Image (cartoon, helix red, strand yellow):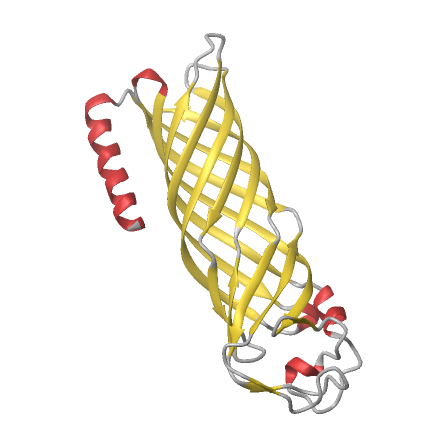
Amino acid sequence: MFRKLITTAAIAMATTSAAYAQDWYVGGSIGILTQDDSSNAGTTGAFTTGNGSPAVPNGTAVAAGTPYGWNTEFEDGMAASVEAGLRYGGGLRSGIELAYSKADVDRHSGVTLGGTVIDGVDAAVLTGSATQLGATVGAVVDDGRGEITNTAIFANAYYDFDLGNGLKPYVGAGIGFAQVEVDYSPSGVGIINDDDTAFAWQLKGGLTWQFDPRWEAYGEYAYRQTDDISFDNQLFPGTLDIENSQSVVSIGLRYRL
């Protein structure tokens, strides 16, 4: 369905550009990324716990399909993008954008297994170790190492409001796909280290300043989101769905060809 939407949009833009295109432009931007917290959730395969005694005794059987998850917070990161597009009459324009962003993990918290919070249980419970590790699950995941990286391509449509003084506020929206790479390695314990591709969309708002017949500067806010991304857990059997949404504030330049 999403592929059909993108194909239809691309054909519509191509048809419109042939009839109404006024000029091409290219542009690029850099920005500050705020990666939204993720409420990670999944289900386990069948496995046997380690020594989380007395709350979770060693050798406790966990049935396949048991729900588990935790919350992940991210530090602010960086973003960059390049775009090539066409301007049409009446304030309309469209573009194809390649966007990149990266944010480090700040911390994980609120680990649950079977609906029970296990932050206070010895971390051996999830490793299968019969010997306690001397650190709780909460302490281990609080040392949130890792990162999330998005590389996305969007087909965008914009409307520019011409104020007649060289300034043009604008709004825009886009759909596309993103390759999302996730590394969750709290305290050096590898849990997730993989990539997935998902449908992506974005909404934009900004202000353009034309300071030269060919050059424009712009500031922009973009909200981006993908479908949840799913990965296999490397610590114990199970899969995990990760939420992926972000806000980007950026500045950039465009050049009229």
